[in-house]
Length: 135
Image (cartoon, rainbow, N blue to C red; front, side):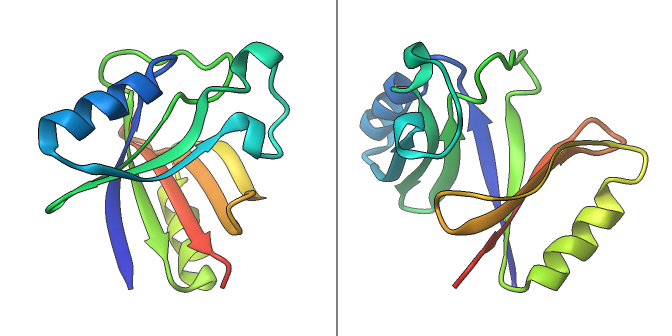
């Protein structure tokens, strides 16, 4: 089973944006992880930035982060689609198809959230985060 979840990057302002959306939609930040809680090697200035967060309010559900240190986002490329896979083989097969004509931005990597993540931009410029939760 697959589930599509929008993923927004709010470079440098994610924590404030999540609080804003929490108020706007009467929602909750159901998960939040700062870079200091991960195995990513970032500068001291970036340790308190959001590596990954999850927001929920009624039928609204999205992921968010400050992005990667040094990454610049432009209006239009700050939204990606994240798919959670229940089968790792399906994650890999989908990745192999989506990467044709596109650009792999992160090959399969273990995350500190006990999952395997791969990211890419497809041939049409759409950003994808493909995630398999290791259970």
